[in-house]
Image 1 (tube, rainbow, N blue to C red):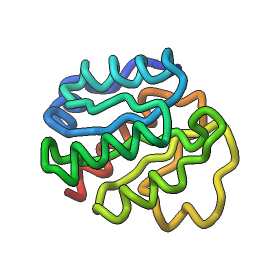
Image 2: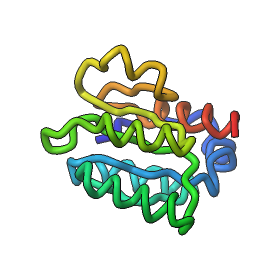
Image 3: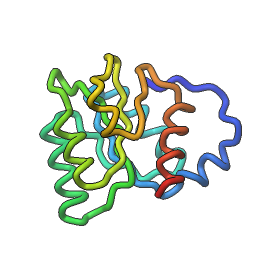
Image 4: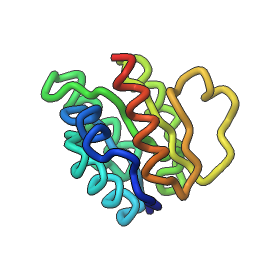
Length: 139
């Protein structure tokens, strides 16, 4: 679940992220829905959520490889029902999609070069927004 506090300037945050396309990969339904609700409120176009590695790979194929909807960033939980999402991160990297890893576990050092950011669960809305704004600023 996302923990929130008052955002400094909701309008400027929404303007910075409005129209950004984010793929959500999270296996816990209530957490995935909280990400989707927050992102929707900010004007982000959400793909997913995918809750398994297979669903994530299918979404990547449909949204990126087939050109249905480009993805500007992905929010990836590393443990998807007991299966680690390293292959998902690699697939997104191969397609040039910035990845923000969200996890309750310690992160393997080899991921540091493959992702745009790490967020430790439970995450704060402000931390997620900051990570996405950083990606938006570089694209």
